[in-house]
Image (tube, rainbow, N blue to C red; front, side, top):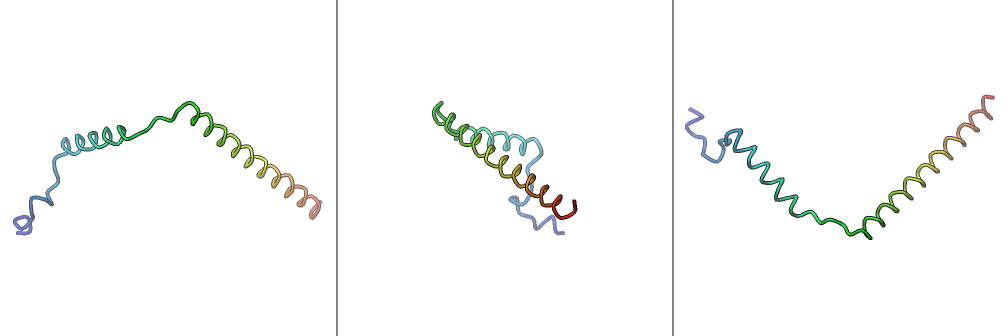
Length: 75
């Protein structure tokens, strides 16, 4: 009885239609992508590299400092 009351909107399309819709939506989104210029790409690459170097220095400093602290307390 409940199936008789379902509207056509609540019925899922078949699997092939859903896959086709997904692929269409992916293609539509890929058309919105803007490729960065060489200058922008180089700038962002340098920014990421510097950020990674800074984080490496921070973690290395903390590791060294906490290691020395541990040796001072327990050594």
